[in-house]
Amino acid sequence: MKLNKVLSMGVAAALCAAVLAGCGASAPASSAAGGTASSVASAAASSAAGSTASSAAGTAAADLSGIQSYVLSANPISNQFTIADFNIENDYLLKMDTIESYTGVRSNDAGDAGLVLVIQAKAGQGETVAAALKDYQAGQVTYLSGYADQATAKSNMENAVITVNGDIVVMAAASNECTDAAGLSAAVDKALGK
Image 1: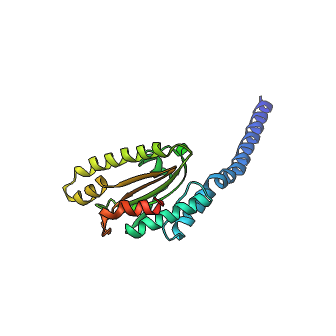
Image 2 (image 1 turned 135 degrees about the horizontal axis):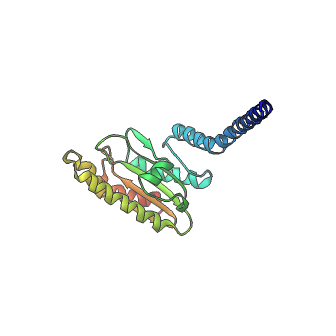
Image 3 (image 1 turned 45 degrees about the horizontal axis):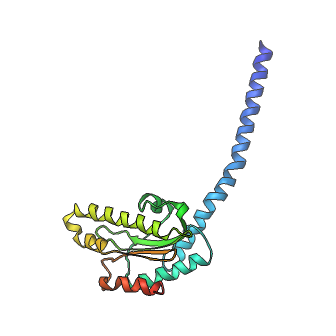
């Protein structure tokens, strides 16, 4: 009996040690795979002039940043919130498998609908992404309709620009800082080379 107990305890201890060793070895590896990309994207986002986030690196992301910067020059946004993967999927209801890369900021101030979101859709997915952004726009207009003190934000969201040029999609909603909301569409077109 005692021998069985000792053997059982020995086996249990060995299994615990193996499990703990396995956890110790795999945790940094999974953090390195998932966490480092997020950390690098966050560091780049905070240091970039336009507070840029991207789900993929490369020249497409650099081009998207240029488009974003140009639109932000016509539509300055104060107290910027950098749009991340969580927002793309949960706020804008976009599927990440339709997106190659993106960059975007929105106002983090209540009552300010300011938004500049530039997306490189996967090949042939530009219209799908634009349709999802139109659904987001409609939902925001409905939501803002419930608040009398958010009339400007509602109007700016109603007049938001959603433009598709090939697989590049831009959504821009005028911020409270924008001095030419009517010219926002022309600024987006110019940024896209239209």
